[in-house]
Image 1 (tube, helix red, strand yellow):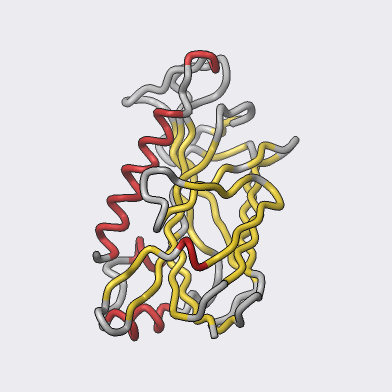
Image 2 (tube, rainbow, N blue to C red):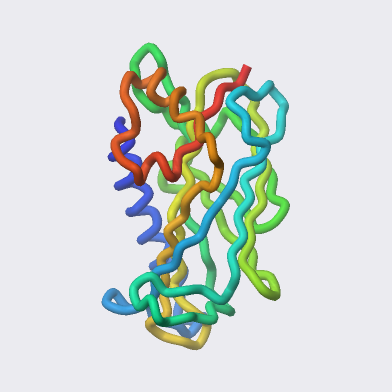
Length: 212
């Protein structure tokens, strides 16, 4: 499996999340030719290349409810009262023998401080669902990931989606999510798989690390 396939899988998962978040009881209807596009960021902490078994890694993300639309750049949107914002993150082991990526969700423990990290029923071996918490002024996520086995790993943060705002149709949204870490240890990806990531899209979203 190559990283371009990962990208396609995450896109499919995001679409599924968008559709599943648009139940009639929430009184919102997504529109394929409507909605918004926003940009948000996430960060891994502490930023290191090597962690020990039992260390805690934090994934933090927070963004204002007041957002600039990337489609209509003159439009500022108050995105309060979403029916839900989330996506499916991928966690992989980088196999230096086969030069492949292998689903590695079972090699970590997960804890939620803000928002939620849970099972992804579609591809549980490689994906975890992330759901952001709505707070008074922003949407936030803070999760803890604790490695239980040694190896080389890559965490691939997802773009997010929302089915819309409660009581408002055609307010579905996509969220382009990128990592702000200055060093994502991409050298480990190239070392394990014998090639660099395929595009800037992957580089902006992959965080690699070693557990010893």
